[in-house]
Image (cartoon, rainbow over all chains, first blue to last red; front, side, top):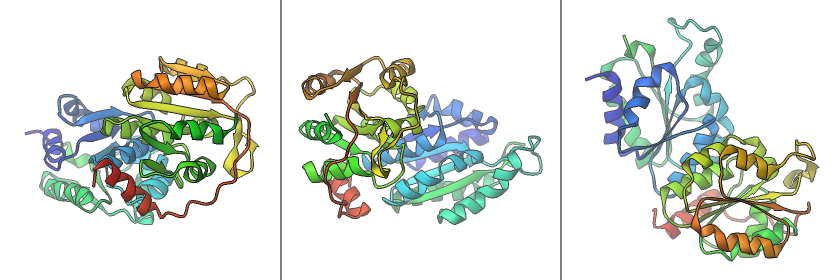
Length: 162
Length: 182
């Protein structure tokens, strides 16, 4: 089974019913699989917009996830703090993590390095998913976000796709 | 017609209301507080997206009290609303040309900026412009048939309205219990 299939299976098993997304090369396979999933997939124009849609869906009792590149985290910060965090709504941030050793675009490096510290500053716990063996952590973190009505995040590392 | 007149009309509709932060939320709270109101306390620009998520997530009508300044902060959301077009979403844009909650400074737009034309160009195919309460009421009465954007041309100015004395968690819990979502 491909890594993309395993990730989408984890998302489905955790009960996620809405995914908002802004694309990344690394997320292409996941996004293609979401097209044939029972999970509702809403592409958005900007990551912050996805935070708002997710908040509305959470108010209706849904289990939303925001799929994006780590650079998109920078576009969401105020809404994560003063909407999702303020009202203690559930949201899972699933991010491709760019800017590492294998990165060939220099502009990816600054936000790639800052993203974990941005999550720390916001008080959002996160997992780093670097190998198929880590996917169990992903599913338990997803379940935790919805059971505890809080934000959680995970970085998908490039090494996942050899 | 001022924002408070628009809010009083919307509050008579049967449905959920998402109110933009600052004076829109305060005016709704003082004019017609009810469990089906969601008061934003921060996150300017998120009213439309919150309304879209709510409309996609449950079947009741959702009214969003949006402003021209807040809409321009997240203009792309009009394109997403146009694509998803949930039939139970009505975006009411109070187009008064000012940031009312920060001291009525002019919003960052040209005098010629046409909010209704922006919505149509984004792909919203049911856009209604209103300039008085009679037109607004007609638009609200007709908006249950599909995803709607109402652009309400209004005078600047806030009503006397106290700060909302509910905690964020109380706002959320009351709203979600009303929906049967918790």
